Amino acid sequence: MRIGFYQFRPLFGKPDHNCRKVVDRLKSVRADLIVLPELCLTGYLFKDRTEVKALAEDPRRSASVQSLVALCRRRGFHLVTGFTEKARDKYFNSALLLGPRGIRRTYRKLHFFMEENSWFDPGDKELAVDRVNGVRIGMMICFDWVFPEVARTLALAGADVICHPSDLVLGHCQQAMLTRSLENGVFSVTANRFGTDRRPHGEVRFTGRSQIVGPRGELLFRAPSQREVVHVLKIDPARARDKAITPHNQLLKDRRPEFYT
Image (cartoon, rainbow, N blue to C red; front, side, top):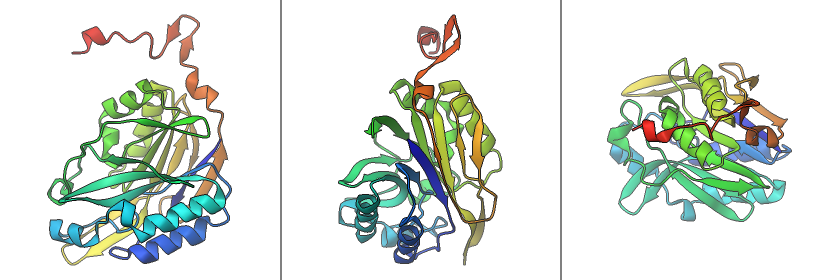
C-alpha cells in the first residue's frame, strides 16, 4: 500500500482556495491513501464559536467535499482530511475518510487543545477502523496523541495504519508518535500544517514536520518544519499485523486488562 501526506499552509477563512490548492497539488500523485492536516479547509485560529458557525459545513452538502471525492475518483485513492463540521445545531473538529464513492467515515475529535472547547462540541463518535484496499485504517486528530488510549483502542480494533490530521503547536508530538506506533505495532501518518494563522485576536505558529512512522517505532520519513511537502511511500501492512516482540511475547495478547482499572 502507498501511503502519504500533504503538508501545506491553509489560508484562514478561505475554504474554496484551500480546496483548490489540495486538488491541484494532488491531481497527479500516485497513492492509495493520503492524509491532510486538521481543519485544513478553513484554517485553525477561530475567534469564537460564531466564526466556527460561519465556516462549518455539513460534509454531505459541502462543495469542497464533493471536489475531494471527485479527486479520489479520478486518482483511485482515499483521503483523510480535517474538516470543520456542522451537524444540526452542533459543530465538530472532525476528520473525514473519503474515497471514490464518497464519505466512508466521520471521526470527531475527542480531546481538545487550548481554546478549542469554546469553539467546538465534544466528539461523540466511537473510535473505529475501516478497510481501504484490504488495509485497516483508523483516525485520530492532533491533541488525541497525548492520550495513549486513543491509539491503543484503534490498535485493538485491528488498525494497521493510524491517520493523524494535525495542527501541531507543541514541539514534542512528532517524537511521541514514534512511541504510539511502537507500543501498538502500527504505522502512523501525522499530517501537520506549517506557517502561522495571524488573526486580529492573536496568532499561532505550526510546527510542520509531518511524518510517517513504522510499527517498530522507526521514523520512515519526516518533512522539514516550514515547507510544503507531498510524500508517499510504500508499506507492507503485514508488518503491522505481526505483534510479536520476542518468540514468547505478543504485544496485544500479553495485555492483562483486568489489572488496568
